[in-house]
Length: 272
Length: 274
Image (cartoon, rainbow over all chains, first blue to last red; front, top):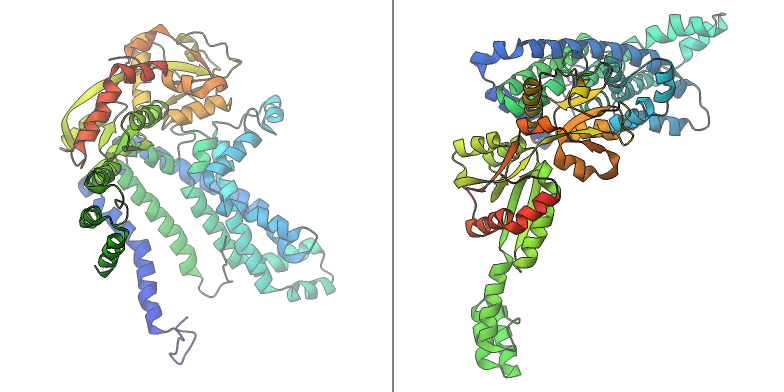
């Protein structure tokens, strides 16, 4: 922001900085407190234990899968919400954003009654020989459920900011809608899509409540890193703290990488 | 101060001279206006009784029984208030260690009580007041026809247990070793509640939980007792917390839990006697 206003005038009253500092401290202090609590001599053995590595691997794999699913489902959703007005659009947007504000446990219960053995779709799936409960698929579904709004919101914001002038031009030049989408729209909002995907990945990585409720907890199958931390906390606080730090580090790396790379990209709006 | 003097004036005018002066002296003008010295001292002691409040931190599995015992205790000792906080025993120990205001701690296992007493946060010795054993919980129809502990090891049966890190999980492991049955659980949950949830939602064919959880769950699950459960008996200790400001009342509450009346409430819920 500073670099953009060459005069040096920011328009921010000085007292705002004091409150902003308090706000930043509120977020940073607990992280500092956690780092201070880490048992450093034991740190490496704690985070390289078999169960920890398995949990981290599972977390990364499932988060990647759910991010892919978010992209596949989220691009069309964002396009429909941003480009073509239709009755009930506001309602649809509200429902798509619902997982942002729902407690994840509620999401887990809802998924259970959809894909569970006795659920809405679960019975038919079971007849077809597909069992979702207690499988890694269940973890991916839970993560996608909570992460999808992040992608949709980011992308919809980017689409609205970009406008549809270029698309109109392409269309008048004879490009078919699919070509316009592939050659004009998507390249134009790529930064917004990337930041949405990164946020979805980070959210998937931190998913806990829905997974616990819906997928269960078994090493190597459904016990992701947050679940492993929750379980370790019962017996080994040091291990829980060490693993928490790993999760923080991965999240910071993921989010930092994406935001660091593009400063002038499309606006990202995330609001529940 | 000026208001108090004004009140004194009012009372003087009403003609209850001595009584109102004593009333004001005890800091409660107005309340003790009509019935003299005896009443004012009565007021003082009853306000003290009202502040007689204890906070009991109890294991989640004690929710039903301790809620009943607490209201019985309040009924028997008018003017007392028992506040209850239920959570996993290890969470409660962490909370107390971090300074949460607890007067009584009732743990679901001796290990967590030892953690608290090792931290020098227990007043005196803990008393064992109940025991609990595992039982197999199945959905009402018992779809996988589970009749024994060995049935849980059959292929294709979806069993959910607690992770070995939590007490119910280590009990399950003990029984596995003792019976030579190897379970292949589809999930190892962090708490009994989560195990029970997987059974009540019929996601799992069977789960290993405590007897008391099954009697609490009502019609949603059916219990299948098995004789090998006595290989892993869980003992519940209770103690006064060292930092308690009301140890007398805390002791009285523990006395009630360990009395024959308390035992009856606990036994009705499925707990055993140590």
